[in-house]
Amino acid sequence: MPDHNPPPILSVRDLNVRFGKNSIAAVSNVSFDLRQERIGIVGESGSGKSTTGRAIMRLLPPSAHIEASQMDFCGSPLLDKSERQMGGLRGKDIALIMQDPRYSLNPVLNIGRQVAEAARLHLGLSRTAALETARAMLERVRITDPVRVMKLYPHQISGGMGQRVMIAMMLLAKPKLVIADEPTSALDVSVRRDVLVLLDELIRENNSGLILISHDIRMVAAFCERILVMYAGRVVESLTRLDDAQHPYTRGLIAALPDPRNPVDRLKVLDRATLETAQ
Amino acid sequence: MIKVEHLDVVYGHKENRNYVVRDVSFSVAKGETLGIVGESGCGKSTVLRSLAGIEQGWTGSIEMDGHPIGKSRSRDELKLSQMVFQDPYGSLHPRHRIGTALAEPIHAMGLGDGWSNVPTALKQVGLPEIFASRFPHELSGGQRQRVAIARALTLSPQILLLDEPTSALDVSIQAEILNLLCDLRDERGLTFVLVSHDLAVIAHMCDRVLVMQNGGFVDELSKNDLRAGTTHADYSRQLFETSFL
Ligand SMILES: Nc1ncnc2c1ncn2[C@@H]1O[C@H](COP(=O)(O)OP(=O)(O)O)[C@@H](O)[C@H]1O
Ligand SMILES: Nc1ncnc2c1ncn2[C@@H]1O[C@H](COP(=O)(O)OP(=O)(O)O)[C@@H](O)[C@H]1O
Ligand SMILES: [Mg+2]
Ligand SMILES: [Mg+2]
Image (cartoon, rainbow over all chains, first blue to last red; front, side, top):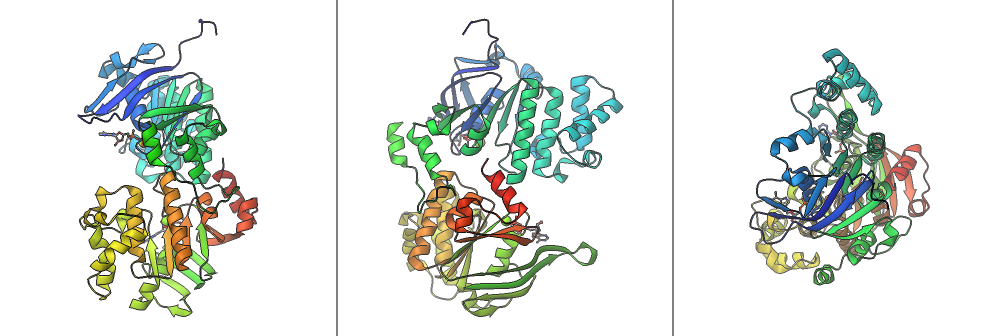
């Protein structure tokens, strides 16, 4: 490839995270580049997915030691930034969507005010214009009665509605990088697809990059162009199709999933002893 | 083994009356595994809790093992069925050791102190005996669910009522727990009612599946239906489509 390509949105090399004096690293030597694409990070709980996402956002607690030979956002090193500079990036250029959006929203502001606030901040709109834009954005994320929803507080809305509100705010902020950590895990299956479709629209419209973190390997494989499989803090495999999986861990995870189209009497279980010696 | 007719559960009064379960009828044969699938809030847990005797505000009729069952249960009726929940923390006292949790049902029934039963109870779910002296927080999620299953089995019930038993677990641990449940079912001829929002889990485990929406059943699927993806109602078709992206 010619080298006049723009730098990747995110470039991570040898990311290591350790908590306190814990001798076991939560994240070990994770490296990847993200361009205008959707990358999935999958693995079991405790494999280091969220820690990776939070390290990029610089949102880990002070007990976390983060090291990386490179962690660049649009060509500029994230680890060199001051807390103030990071604060300026978060929510604007880099956005995080979490499992329960109701915790990411401000509990004392109604939905209308929060979305209008984003419109004022990112589009420089007046108060009335911002409220009208907020209504339009909520409609855009297919909330059917935006006027009613704008008056509600975060605890009064469902999880699916909360994710729509988060996505509406991001359509205003146009972040270059979106990190979505189990964004659909708390939602009903029928709502999951809607939220993924909206997330997809957001990413494509803004030419952003997405890191989709999930334990649901099938969902990630269906939604992302590339999958990083994490096991015990390491990326053991990078895939474009599940069928190409070679690593015994990835294959074990896929085999453990019940599949109605291929019924079996007993499900395969992971051979952890073998995996651990292989590590 | 189980026969339910015209089961209604209503919360609230007068104009706030909310039918959580509406005119539900079904039966489960001995040794059969019946699945109930549907989205959160549709009333699945309420049906199970009515069967288990935890929910008492129901009307209609419930029969188990050929006998009509009332709202408050006799000891024998309580021994007939046991429930396993999604979050074993809910059924395990955080400050009681695992051994205590496993001895308690026998003790509570006045059948002895229950301690002699603990090693076998642990063994049958694949846990080492030394776990008896541990506390729930010292176990992994999958191990805690094994303890909850062991505890549900202590009074040798014929029926297990399983409410999202693997929804909080990783898929590999889920596979271990589902295999354990199948083994126990086959060894003891247990009858299961399994509730889940996960159609793949339901399809793997069940002989027959009822699809629930807004408090009522809208479809019934056989094992062959599940395999072929055949549905008989719009709602179950949607559920199929969204479950396997
Ligand atoms: N704040 C923290 N303090 C100490 N250990 C932590 C903290 N956050 C995560 N860990 C540990 O780091 C490892 C990876 O966790 P996490 O990134 O949350 O995994 P995942 O998101 O894949 O489930 C786990 O062993 C977890 O216990
Ligand atoms: N004790 C209660 N009082 C009032 N409403 C309840 C109570 N328990 C459950 N509900 C309501 O009943 C409906 C069905 O709940 P549930 O049986 O838990 O559904 P599911 O298990 O399918 O998610 C829900 O709308 C819930 O809010
Ligand atoms: Mg996580
Ligand atoms: Mg429930």
